[in-house]
Image 1: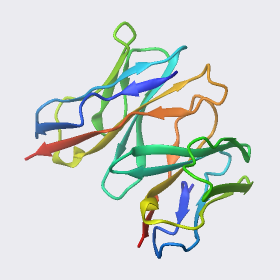
Image 2 (image 1 turned 90 degrees about the vertical axis):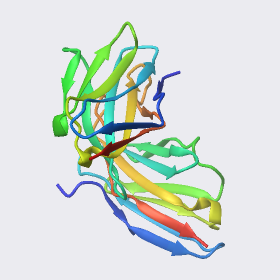
Image 3 (image 1 turned 180 degrees about the horizontal axis):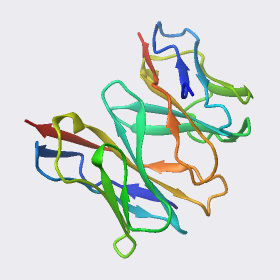
Image 4 (image 1 turned 30 degrees about the vertical axis):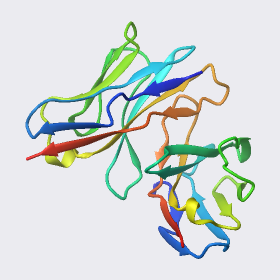
Length: 115
Length: 113
């Protein structure tokens, strides 16, 4: 069965420092991987996705993610965090061996960026 | 495109009443998903449709919950009768095709008192 795990409930980082949000996946076929962000009282917003190609994927708001097949990981990164990056981040995987290709979301990681 | 549109944004109702949540997916998207989000359980997939046909409703918690998609541009999620434990934020999302991500609506915050 396909799944993703976000091992950290919360990540705290000071503004200007690098930010990493961890995600590992488990799928039976080739993974399509996604990151979403949810700001307070808002729906989830798409940040970036990995399908094929370069293992380093660049997305919105200066975020990037690195696909690592050997470690089955897809960590989200930002070189210099902003206070406005404080939000809830979700990793998701879509396994195309599943007939309908539905997304499986992780539990979410709360990011708190302090001034 | 206006994105995925959900209504109402907020709903407060008394226990036992019927509640209907509405969703208009992005035009051309052929898959539609209903999610529920709570602090305790996180983001739960309730049901999803492909080309207006329900594909998987295994996430629907009880028979009190029902969902329909009468056409490609409209879906409803109904709770009858509602209970306080149904209080949550309900999201609708749509997707163009397999391999693509979802576009989420802004959600409906339901409070059952």
